[in-house]
Image 1 (cartoon, rainbow, N blue to C red):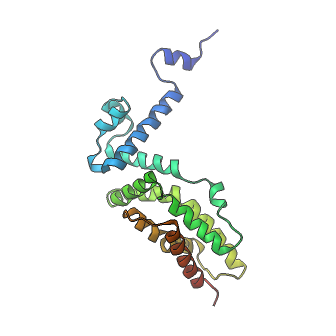
Image 2 (image 1 turned 180 degrees about the vertical axis):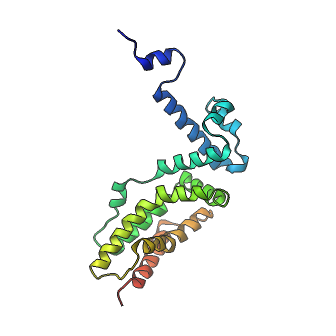
Length: 215
């Protein structure tokens, strides 16, 4: 009987597809840790490769330079922390106000844990040099929630409860108005209690809704 190809490849010293994928994941995990802890300038290919027992040549075979590895690591880290459609849908509450508060809290929660905060700081720091990493983060981490919110705003407008002409624009304005303030405060190293965050979010949600009422 013919030998199993993956078993044969493994015994011959070539990694299986699963092993290769695991090595790739380990490399991106290590790269992300180095970039988050040391920053782009101080992180080195040598140090990252050493963490996963790879040679620099092996890393460069996959990524031509440190910038390419940064982009891949940011995408990897963002995908790992992106919330599912089910989690986003679960923010829908009985009232519109409570739904908007839940949506805001979901977004703020992404920077409420250490790795999420470090990732956001890295993107904020390096996006002037690599604007695409900001777009990557927005497309993966924020856009699904923005689209969900836009659908809610469209439905509320169709029902006559709100008057919003551009729901996607309004959803993005909501994120800037309601979410960005507490996020910037947290990323600056200041401490916000759960009560403080709730108070700020509800105040901003109230202003947003008053501005979107039919006239």
